[in-house]
Image 1: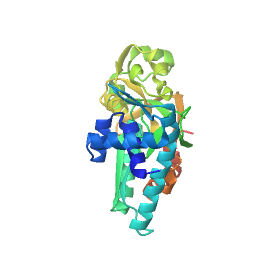
Image 2: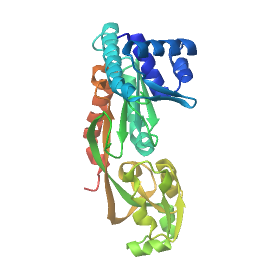
Image 3: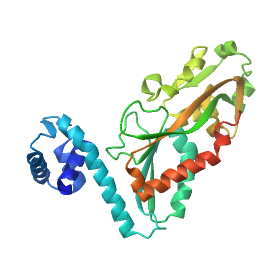
Image 4: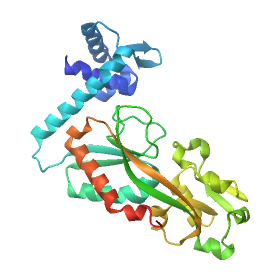
Length: 296
């Protein structure tokens, strides 16, 4: 089977359109269409349902896709081994993570990894509501929920805790609540429910139902800054809040426990730069375990 044709299959599957795939591959539209036609002719089956709105994999295409992905990873691994010495890590590797974890932990940690490997380009991207490792939107991802389906390698990375915080300046103006019922005398900073991309983000509901006033902010960093500025009290990640000056933990009896899961493509272990990033992330989370659940 011609790899040149299979990489066309991968590009069209990932981008959903012949034109977008052609741009990604640096080819013209007719070349992509011709090679896809040749692959379908060789297999005597249609791999895509070509619609005016884009290309959708057929059942045969869905069956062929993981084979093409496996070949892609194997070729990348071989090329990397030939091109570089064993102790040299190079190329770009992308990891997706929730914005709070990315901003308050991974950005600093991954910067150190990039410093150690000058030829390695580490890309930290915010985890969107929907993403695909098979489409190479990321090489690794850290998720809040364990995926229910998909061809992925999933491992529990770490458990972490969240607590209720207020700014010291806010508490100088408003008495800290000592019971859940007293939250009605305060403004509460929470997330935006219909923009939450994981069920694990439901902790704000427990606070909001008692709130006298509510201010909603979609991002973790936005909620952190709002609480720090004195907009109200809010549920914040302990590992992040402890690094922000002027925040005070209140209502210690109310605490929330969640988990991060590390996701990777099962064939990614053959790619050294991905393996190096994965091993680094696992090690640093293990070393910083107390930071993520400081009140246990």
